Image 1 (cartoon, rainbow, N blue to C red):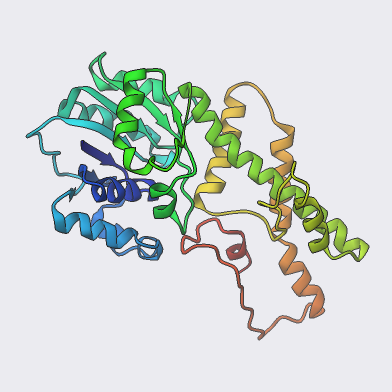
Image 2: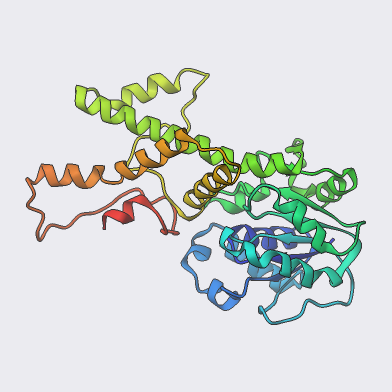
Length: 325
């Protein structure tokens, strides 16, 4: 298939690399805020296993073409798919970007919205495609930083928001190479997929904050919280994932999605006391390590060297440990 990828996010880079790797003809145009020259020099791209090498392989074999933001998309043959992977902050540009690419699309093209935007945005973007025969679907960005290539090429699931059988077939064909072992597609309405992405991170954040509360209680009672974690995780209704206590959650995408969920709640006229508590607990826990360090040295920290072990990926924006530095 002939694909256009728009965006400078990890999701955009991974999609461009993986789709060209399996033989699709891919044109990737990064967002104007971060062109290819900036991305090529970024530490996060170099730190993602296999991603940089796969991009270079696509360029070398002619299956991937990377444009500068001001370059026009080649209009020699109509494009079958527009893959949109923008950051939430770039939502205001999305409509114009889709409209600008629309003349290059085939009459039955599909827009895959892989951006984390407010609920209902995929439907709004469909109106910018300029042809009633074209469709827009929501594909939740479920990549994990540090293992994005593996998560895309060997996915555990594709959360697809789609109201059109023809569009679903086209998306399945596009991603067929990554869906061979078993069917990993879970189809639902577009708005449900958009909300599911936000709700997943809300649930993970709730587990982390709850476990941190239990860790604080265990500390005050002289109990090793590791035994408590193992006891909780052994219950099949709970499981072990995201039960590790620490100094709070962070990261550029995770924190951003939680704030987006809070915005959706507010825009709907509902106020989530639970989400407020989760975010408040997280902010409080970011002080935990510093308070313990301060108490251990009785407030005498001048001249001491502190090492922090456990940074999960190379992208350190909004990471809670960095708030302590």
